[in-house]
Image (cartoon, rainbow over all chains, first blue to last red; front, top):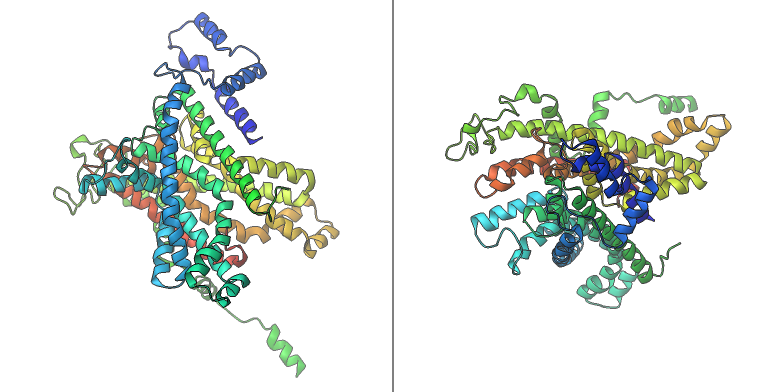
Length: 292
Length: 298
């Protein structure tokens, strides 16, 4: 449903705001050439037919040719997509690695300096634009210390800075959320019971409380994935990561319509389907919440 | 005797407005609030407090470091950018861009969203289902992508950035306000207003709107920072404020290639964004605790 609306909106925006044939022709081309091009592009057909063709092309994985490099956009995308997925996967790993301990620490040591430090870190994470964070990291670790490579893809060291800066915002969001939901579950009856049973504090927190608190994090899982995908564009630009984001950025710079259109459409489709899948998985995992 | 007690109860306690205002700010985060004041002040008086032209390219003065480094001087306290323009001056003018965009997008998007939320909650039924389905679809879109495509198609300009951000902003307001209104509709005062013959519009504006105001104000404050970051991201990607207008995001983009040689070009606007967003988020958190204790978990 959302995908359908999305495709209509994108189609309308691209087709109705200007004649694509006019954009592609040199300014001194005659009227006849314009008519010819319109015919060959199919823009002289009725809108509904054009929409059908557009959807048909996209459904078959054909996104037209890039105006700049003249290669099919689908080739460009299929080269870049795996790289983006790798980066997002690495960022996801960082997020889980950092946000779980931080959230638990700040909830367990509520009100102490550890809590202040963790929540401070979380508040900061939501205020720093990821692309600036990336630049700061480059200044520190590449320019000053020379420890990490600043751009491109390669060995594991190439992943550290991009994945960290990409994950940073999400780390902040999850830490805050986890802290408040942990505090809530620590107050509940079953935690008291677990304590009375004589379980160690470690087991009480990490097994009983955390398990229930994670539900609230998983609920928003779809949103976090969407955030990672969109922020990935910015991070890829900063670190010259050969992924979809960089492709989009080059598309914007060179006003390369088919590329921008395809990248936006594909990323949006990925975002929407993953959040749908997360929602379904979530309803499956937690029997208390079923799709109504 | 009874009369005397009534008198004492009914007699209004005289409190000066100043005391009231001060009491309202008790426990307020002073540092974030003063950052916001400085931010607004520099946006309004940018012309009066700056000594350099924010637009004029001056290549001989390019990439002068800030005053505490070798080669820096106090005439360019935070140094100059690759085109020889004063970084501090451009940051001050950048506040103007940020505040106009945040203000306009929140007014348009927030206003429209509130109206949708009021309508959906008030009329319920099919209207509600339709409007909320629309809001859900909007919320499911990756916002930055949507805005990029829009700005690409209609061309980068301040107006278009505002339109793009407003178009994705309204849905959250519609959802939250509708939720509040649904609760309010069960209350007696709405039924009474209806009995007394108030029109639908009057009930929405005079009875519902004031009651959702605290939520609305909190949400607006919390989203200023978000809008500023989205605008900066768009400008950074070249799909936002077109150069030469000084916007923080495009300043970061212009300085990106000089990260290794001229750190100040990107660090200064980055810090500006961080401080302002932090200030609005912290103030929003404070307002939320103050106005609306039950909503702490948004």
